[in-house]
Amino acid sequence: MIDRKAEKCAGEAGRESVRRLVDSLRAMIAEAEETVVRTASDQMDEAVEHLRVRVQKRLDDFKENYQQAEDRVADMASAVDRTIREKPYQSLGIAAGIGVLVGFWLSRKC
Image 1 (cartoon, rainbow, N blue to C red):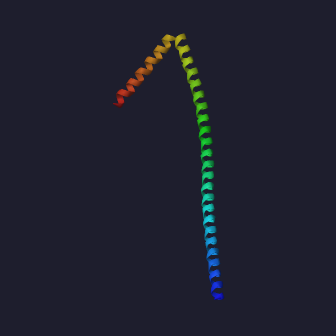
Image 2: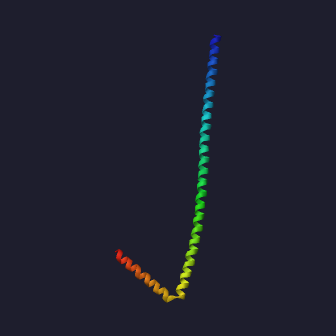
Image 3: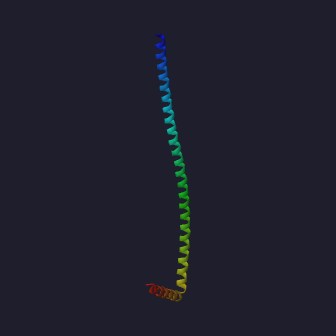
């Protein structure tokens, strides 16, 4: 009878031990899953931030280049306007010559 009680106690202790082991494993798996998700999230955040910085730099470069191009076009337009006002007949002759050449070229294409 004592042996059966000992076996029963040992069986209960063994089941409790197995139950604790299973609970411990479940906790470890949950912690591992959380770590994987957190690591992936951190890596994703870093990648998004890196991409945002690159896009912002490209946008800043584009704005700078656009402003430079706008300034050059404004300078050229000002120079053309000044030239036309200083030499209106020569400008008219050049414009007419270009018009004739473009007209001749277009008539041959069609």
